[in-house]
Image (cartoon, helix red, strand yellow):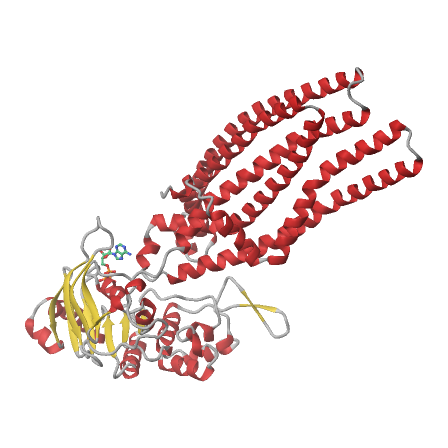
Length: 610
Ligand SMILES: Nc1ncnc2c1ncn2[C@@H]1O[C@H](COP(=O)(O)OP(=O)(O)OP(=O)(O)O)[C@@H](O)[C@H]1O
């Protein structure tokens, strides 16, 4: 777990406050002004009360007394209104800053090109902490700062009043405030550490909750009777978080109890002293009222200041996690050359040279010196047993991971020197673990080329080539049918209708259609695009895919070797290297792994035919 969040930097303070003023200038300004006004009101009230009492005691004229009482009433109205208006401005500021920060956070996450970052638990913990911070940090900081400012104004006003009456009491109450401040800072630090220490448990809790409430796991959960097992595990995580929270709460309670008793004794002593002074005639009735109001109010004001500072301190700590995530830049982008902003056009042979890769420093090598050339405009099939590293090589070709050693180049240009986005967007890939989006059928296809999301003709054409047009037409709302079981579809009359779900093979055709939407790819990768299809559909799809991508460099992966034998060349991936390379005839003649796998599959079909 990364501990940098335990060292807040005060230098960040202006940056975070700026966020609030950038996101919601008027509400933030209103919040500031009203809070400052709210801070001046208690002292004004105390002195105004003193003025009234002194006038009555002096027997001043009724006009003066009424004017003073009217002023007091006005201050009462202001003190009633200011906090409500301030809360309203605060809520507006909060909503705007939350949106602003979340937007920056998700922008930064979208910029991360190397997907190993998403597979690192440390990064995921940081994302969770950053998400928490983005929902609270600036608003809590702003609220904390303003509350501290208001508390300080009240405290200074009231302490100033006490100074005028008794410097000794002023000093006593000032010293008594210090432990309150220290206790609050300690609490903030403990709460932040608690959040860091329990972030893994929180994420696991969400994971178990999603297994129970989500659609993805529902079949297995029912069939294997896993519901109570996951519920118990979820409860275990919740209990461990609660236990940690309880420990912090108990420590805080003990500290607060001691401090509260201390404050009460100090304030009580001051009140008794002032009453004795008034009884001896050394304090007037007005002074006594100011004294009691100030002595009682100053403790609340100090606590408000301390809580505000503590909250601000906590936000500064939380903001470090937010900065850690928003500071992440696209891996490899910094190394890219070429004019900024101009997309790089890639063309030419794809060359893989002595490519080594492992997922982590401690892990086994998955690729151990792969050497491979895919000539421009030709098709290459990659075959190998489960776990041979085919999908890993695909991810490296897509620029989703960086090679541990060796290089991949397109037309002689190392892809690490190309802005990651340009290369990734130039690869048309249809993955075996494709996505099923809870969107309309048309959107599920159109996402393949966002610029043509509304281009129904292009979407239909892609669906037609993937063999999806027929069943999409027959859906209740055709291409506009929502493909979801968890959301409602809104209809033109403002009503709600349930979405539709497709079969596995139908979803796969949609994924293929999405892949076919992409234009101008310098490399098309088909990573088992037909595993969920029936034999007839697979044959038609392969024909369509080969036609569609003709002229483009193609990499095809399939365990059904009959589907790849027409490729210009076939590479066999074995023990992290290319074990054999040639066309179907040559590899069959060589009698190696390809020959063995092909013969086993062919024999299976021959047996079935008999
Ligand atoms: N994200 C990952 N993190 C760590 N190890 C991984 C990851 N993905 C794959 N591996 C490991 O890399 C090895 C190769 O996996 P890969 O998915 O590339 O094989 P494959 O040839 O595509 O297999 P299949 O034919 O089953 O799809 C496996 O041992 C797997 O455990």
